Length: 182
Image 1 (cartoon, rainbow, N blue to C red):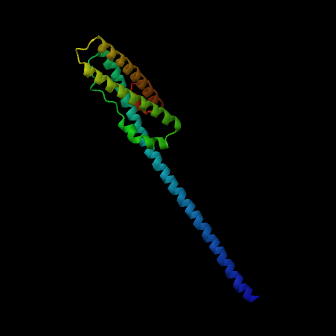
Image 2: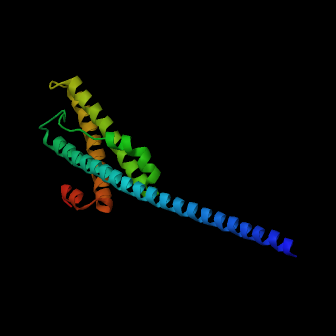
């Protein structure tokens, strides 16, 4: 009986020790993974907040520029609207990262807004080319063409302005709202 006790007691102790060691190792590894996940989640949240701030600032700038386009078309003081620049670089640089982290509604809203801005920029470039091509001594047909293009530019600029106001009203901070006069 003594040899059984001498054999099974140390075996049982070693098995319990191994089992406890494995359980502690698994618990420690799970805890470490939870801490790494929490740290990564905090980093991504901070990064997304910064990214959101930059994208919303771009929305504010484009909304202000759309307002300036409408005012410029109404006043005829700058027929080529050379001082107006629509900003698309921020969205193009941040789009994939923003789409990865943003909720679906924000992705749709901002993608739609920047698609409208891109459309407005292209139409504005076309308007400038037509104005430059025909020059100040334009005929009746050229004047009508410029007026039609200006009407479309005005409509799209109003859409961009309204979309920008909605986005900033819903998602912007107090400073961004103040820039738009809200």
